[in-house]
Length: 357
Image (cartoon, rainbow, N blue to C red; front, side, top):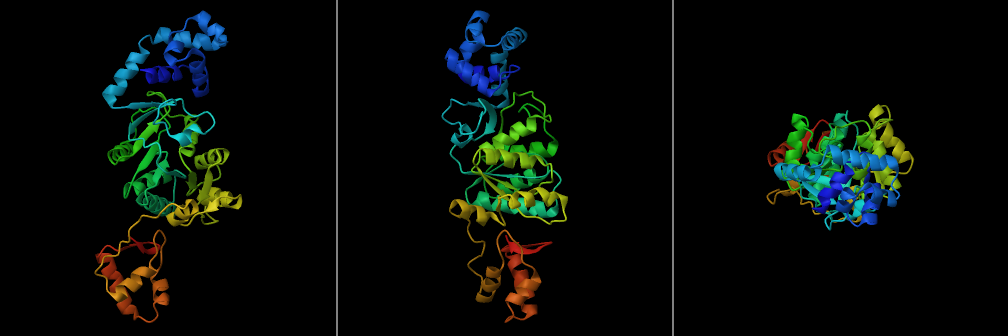
């Protein structure tokens, strides 16, 4: 029951996470804070405007705790408080961590997590980069975290879902109805063993101020934050700033210097962020084991294996580059081999060339 009192207390106007923790420590529990009378609150040196806010909230919502319990049970929503064993340890390390969050799915507090964030208006380059890196990180057992927004966030979640697990941190309450496509994505995340979470009370609308708050949780959950595409004033740069403030690593995918969407990433790299070309760069940075299995089937013959080995993972190689590297093989034969590799689903072709499937 205590966590429901914590969440209810946190929903009171002006009662942020830090104040809730302070009051819980003073009174011994959130329930005691919720039930405290004015003299007790004054003795705890709570300012008059905060006392008024709590008293008014209790008068307007006398059954708030019971209603929250009913909501969570009926909507299959769980609560995790700062004092619970399954609260992610990394998140506890940040300045003013959420005193409670709402979630659906499986938390896995000790999972290794990397955030992938970026612009809402990505290019095809950004989409490929986010999806490929997220997919390979997930295949290596890393949980990919992002904000479930359109653009790079969605690309990262979709990439991770191909081979593993992902976490979506919402910038609104968990009761708010998302867009149809976003709802489908969130359902897939939960069904695949991931988690959808938010620190905002269930009915909280998305607003300009909620996204920077969300972004600090994205950064706080992770060992590092990768920015794929970001303009000059992208929210992704706020996430990277939080990461740097929390002592987390900041990574960036370089971009075309003539594209506005690349400005933020290129600036981050100039200012010391680690340049990332593929998931392997991140895995090697942390010395994470790369558990990805080669897509090459056993029945490849010697010449097929030779061409397959030339094709990178997470990057692209053009047909001209393949021809240059395999100058001892006739061009017509190379074309046939590439076709066979595609048929066997060893490689895929995209606009930038070929990459391992």
